[in-house]
Length: 287
Image 1 (cartoon, rainbow, N blue to C red):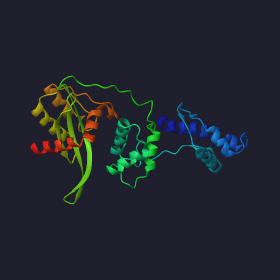
Image 2 (tube, helix red, strand yellow):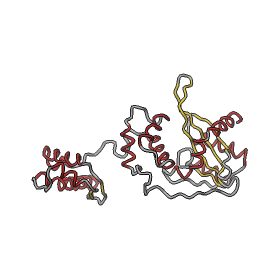
Image 3 (cartoon, rainbow, N blue to C red):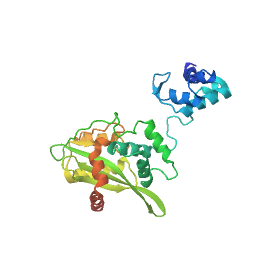
Image 4 (cartoon, one colour):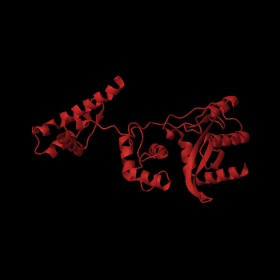
């Protein structure tokens, strides 16, 4: 029973908070020249919510609260629970990951430029409105190129070949084969010190089996690395890869979640040096 009552209590607190904001308008006691002037004044700075967090509202939101209260009383001011709470309605997980990657690697890209990249690379269809990307970037504090949440990164490089390899997957355009449209994934492994492409392959699936195939070929050709630096994708964070690395003595560090910029070397080399693509294609043909 307590679990059922708690959401109602939180909703009531929010309703009371909203009522306190609009009370001067309801009772005609605001000191401003007009309602709109009052809405603008109280939304100039972020407001502190009942849970202690802060949020900067739009003046139109306050006006909407007034209309809701006049139509349905304080019950109408209670927040409505979204049926899809916890998920993004328009943007799929792959598009969200790409937004984080682009903002971390190229922080000065604005939402419109990121939207164009997402559409051009088939992360989202053109039917998705650019407002969805703008809203996501704004709500997740990714808007500013000088975002205080962006980490201060320092250059590092291993001092010898084989001390650390970095691996990642690059998304390539869709191709049509046998009447079926399929995305192509380029899985690459580079040496941290030399930037040598030690392994690579083109696949229709970005999964653990395909990465382990590339990793096996790289080890066969260049020996066992001391460390293999990967992210938390399903192809790189799984029990089988941990067992493989453990059996050959390779340390398997992972990046922090949504921290693609920590593997910027392979991201930069893979996306901006076209000759690497051809090296991957040659490797595919050889093996």
